[in-house]
Image (cartoon, rainbow, N blue to C red):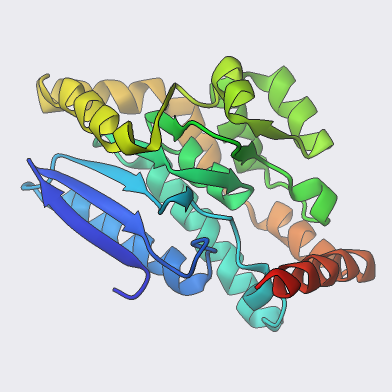
Length: 254
């Protein structure tokens, strides 16, 4: 794998996203993570997953620099794969914990929302769904995923505002479950996942799926209508201009 590093410790797969300085997600990373999670779910020797990034970034979200140059076929394939990954992570029956090691906007926040527990590093980091200011329509399934954790009212307001939360705001809203010094994040996550693994695995996993039944129905439903709207807006001149401005700013900082 080119974009992921995997370590197995006490029957837990520690999956670290490893693509560039900010773990920006392109189609390769999405597909590698998708295939890995499917394989882990079927592997009886792995009991759970801790998903993490690198110091300073969990993941900066979608790689706008690469996606901007995708043609119509490529960008549709990317979004189909991304929504499929969201579905796979949401339906994953084994324990899944996100160690949010830094900034986690947009697609990064979406990845974290799929997990059972989120622990985030202390510091001046941000997390949230800021797609609207970028000109990207938020798919129905992602709204439902956000609302599952923080409630529909807050999810509705935060998405329309493109709100990025501080670590403290994320903890207060329920988006993040625990905050810790970055050097202790993995310790906290491993302790939490072992607390899940002490229970009968069939009981725990089926209970998780039961609790997520309505959410699973929503993220696995046909999203072709919404996706068509997302893609139509992606090619709109105003969205292209906003994305191009963001890309220019990113490149100037590199």
